[in-house]
Image (cartoon, rainbow, N blue to C red; front, side, top):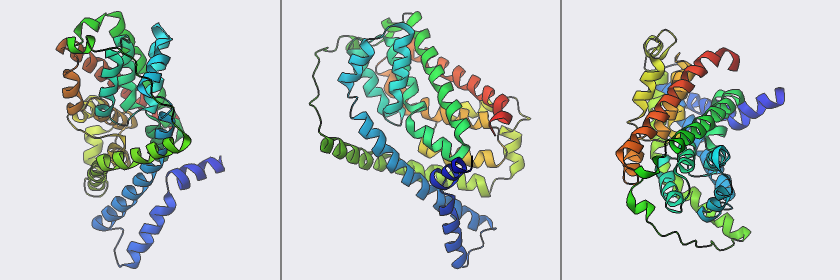
Length: 333
């Protein structure tokens, strides 16, 4: 247990980094117990920690992803049917891009290639919600139990959501240009190890450029919550005494646009101030899965009825997961 605590606190959580930053700021004469001092320490620590984890995770996951180009993923999914296909699609979503906007082009490609719409929606739900990056980052902040249960619940929501869409035969609500798209298979060239390393490096650079502004915004908001907003306010709105906290957090999260890297600092600060675990995780799920930009992109591919069903399934699933986490919180601490 001591070894795991070391891994979680010092390797994933980088507590040593926080101590180093605190010592440097103190040496510069900054009072870390003040609001400004605490905010600066929180901001520097989280930005550096998340940036390091971001680059490392994207490199590793992109290297793995290089073995699963769209053509190969489509062939893998084509071998399965029913609940098995939805489950494999949800699992494939864990090794794909980190935000819903990046997942939608793959979703469109899978749908136009003739895969069942329910299967592609299982992929679309799981991809931003439960990628491998979220697992490691959640472990670094909330611990291994919370991270594993979060991923399991996310995969369940993705599988059930895709299955419901499949059973309701919603393929008729996919836009015609998607259904009529060319289905000619183009085999990807076999990549060498060097090619995969170059691809992973390029993904790190491109994703970092896209994500870093949201990290700065998310950490900045987290620093404000952590050091400036009274604990009583957070507890009153998102604490255990508000039975509608999960619903409120989900509704607040939908209009935002960020990814797991930008939302975790906010979630961390909210939890520190007394918000319930499930309420915080509902906020994270809503931000990463149901952001307005991604819904606008998805509307170009599906008709309003299917889009509305997707939003309903995700929202209800996120709210249920949030309340389950609130019930389970004493057992996960």
